[in-house]
Image (cartoon, rainbow, N blue to C red; front, top):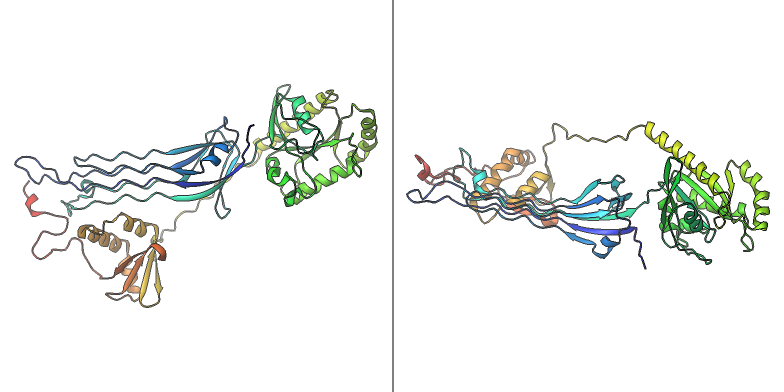
Length: 453
């Protein structure tokens, strides 16, 4: 039996960047030919892409943990490491990506639209890339950045022009089967339809899609029955069709009360009040049902609804219904073409943004947070004095030392870089110059033996 999955939680782990290489070129009669360590490769991304040939999120629900490959480390001879392979997951058109705290991240409605869930880390620089006139022979390289780890929710909101809504067993599936090539399951018991079905309908030159949504019951908007799980599939529909059973024998039911019950659920769910409405009185091939339809049609028309008396079984009245729906769809598409284009919100970084923040904590402790200093710490090999000196130079050029002085930091005080739970702790010693002369030796990152070569 086919399984339909329209919500899933995806755990994405991007690949880490490869480490840079520390290497010195060597050949006969030239033992110190200069640094030639290559850069590490970029870590792979985890990407979701909208695919018109994908109809469900079932394949992701079965493997909800996606991990991209790490980048390869660099090698000597200025050989750069290979990039890690991306993980690309196909999702149906209409998939909405939200963060773990409910923030919308992407709405993939166009074929080929993609969203990077977790971004791979950048590869570390090798010592060949770190060489400069001031640092001619760096004896260190940078480590690769770790890839992002992220948990997001994927929810499918089916793309359809027309949505059929109504109580269970009113004939929605039969109607879809009668006007399109779709073949949903049809039976005479409630909740026969357990998943939405899409049908493609042609009316002259207009082609549109119809969604058969599982039956709603009073209280569906609060979780009763199956309706809450599938109400979101009519959010994108531009036309809603109330399918009403005029041949039901259930006590206490009539077309007007059925319509009121479904409208109450649509209003309670929200964001559906402005959609065009059409009322279809189904099963009018039964004489008693036709009499009831004739009786309630004036009342429905007085409420402003366009009413169609049809029979999905005998195809009575289907042609006028299909062309009326096509006309509403054309009107909606024309309005969408002339509507204002979506705006993109741009949040530029202020010109005075230093890229970091220094906070004062108790006991003469200072915490430095910001994307750049935190990333630089992750790239540093703390077992290499040159690498630590290079980090100190970068932080000083960024203005971290000056800010610590302004806040009253004194030599020997504790400085944390990064979030408290994963911070790197230093005993601050100002004015540590990674290029300072070291007791008669060559300045850090240089080698006097290279002079003249």
